[in-house]
Length: 187
Image (cartoon, rainbow, N blue to C red; front, side, top):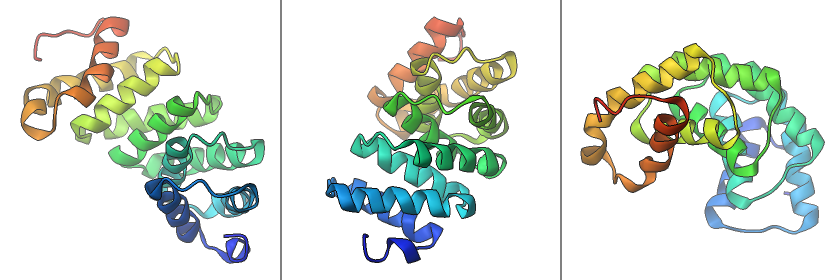
């Protein structure tokens, strides 16, 4: 990464971040700095999945990105938020909450708008991750975001057990129910 980092394109940087996290590899300080510098450099050209993958990778590795990398990723979230799909939104929200990183009002607004837009199509795990992230970050969702998350919970609730194991979904749903008074009627 040190040698090729300066020449990497957005997808290459995203793939490198993802691969390092998937392998559970902790590169040294020089390689980490090169990867973060590459994130800063290519952030303006990243696509939604690339932003999502980079955020997910940093959180999976437990890396607290430096101020420049955080700024680049937050700006990228703002730029690509309107094009994010359910998994992109879920991964980005999960990553922010896992790192305890408040991305700023503009990036938060982009993620919340994306939740409202993609909520009707989110898969159960994506809904759970988004709910958990909202609660973990202490975000008080506006009426539109809350309604989107509640509708998503109601929609996926009956199918949860048949699609994936229940255990990973429980925290997000319980937070939504407890903190925001959503109904258990359909679950």
